[in-house]
Length: 343
Image (tube, rainbow, N blue to C red; front, side, top):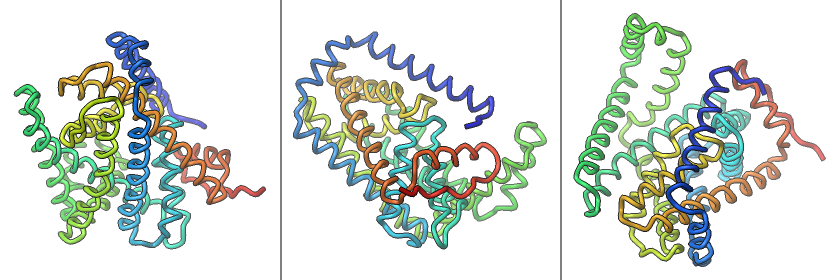
């Protein structure tokens, strides 16, 4: 797989950040304390965490299928999504998203650009939901310092304003390109045809949010999709002998979602753990329990994604080798057709 110098730098930057996060975690909390807390975890609640995460995967497919105009069966899309999730856990550069777009593009009536566009919408919806929930969670959690509440409220308002501005630009595409061209005269890095193509992809994705009916449906599906994740964190809290709290679980989920957006190794190792530990300690919860929850939740999530991805590969009769070889073309030319595995 041929990656650009920039991609290689991004990969090594992510590896360094993951190692620093892991080093920081083990510097503050002794591994023996984490291991002891894990040994005392309650299996029934860990099982509940896994069940809620499976429900999350199913509901995420329901939303994605709606974005694709229901032009693909729920079962096939479920397997395609799980293959992408598995690759995100195992390979760098978030190749899972690339794989999802390629595999969807091979389905009758669909295309790779459609796959890319729907994933743009997915990310925007997820970000919008998180920034809407963050102020609500911060206002209800009394243990948080005042500065953190104010920062959360400000960032939430700023992000919502940015998304609303982008939605307005989606209805004013020529103006959006003129605005980008103007910025290109000020900063040469912004003066490229590739950025205009990326802007078109972003605006295509935002088009689904410019109609109030589809926007409400998508927001409702997004809230329904992330509800099992809150319940999964809630079950994980009980697994490490902490009291169940819907608000605490929501706050931990939001911080974890923001943490994995940072550069990291495949599977978001380290950055996820530090994000969860930071969120739980801010809530006044013990660091050892926070670390054990982060390790257990990440482990359950990792195993589910990998196993579901393997089942998906087998179901659509696609070999790992042909899939990864095809993804090697994502840095340059358009990808070739993925070869089918024959036994």
